[in-house]
Image (cartoon, rainbow, N blue to C red; front, side, top):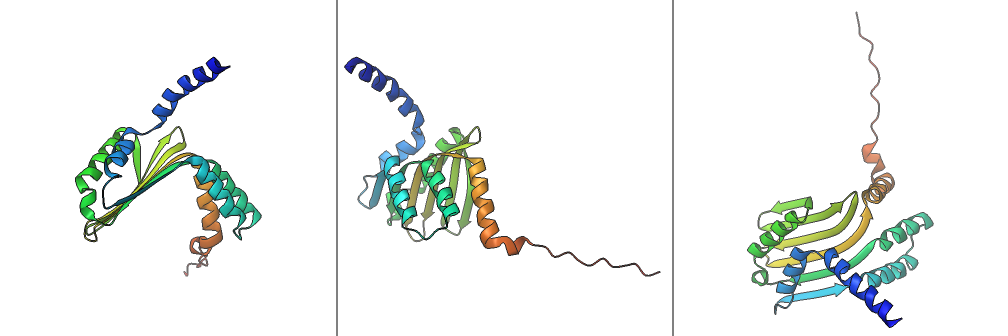
Length: 187
């Protein structure tokens, strides 16, 4: 029995290693220990347990609760870093991180630049499934930097359902177009 468990463990280690993103891991390991940097790493099981507790204590309708439960099941480990000292993580390092992510098939989802502030949301999508989500906020003027990386197994169809439901519930009136009356030509 011990040999079977050992064999399973040895075969699973390489699969876990391939699941990790080298660029994100390198960036996180290098800058997480800075004096001005706060960091946290949460395993996927803790995200799922915390999400279920939050859903149970919320006042969401049953349909919304089920959608939230389905999304929580697809969440994995989260890495978080925050710094209020701009020099703790130089802009050059963030640019190197982005280059590595582009090599690993990450795509820009949202990019906002305003003065010295940059906000970027990137995803790694494989065959219609979002595998990784990365958010980087860097404000050189204020000296703030935030980094959140989350492993996922989220189908793009699930994201579409979520967005459509949110639009239907909260923004439906913005998308309703009133028909203009037909004007008869005068001859």
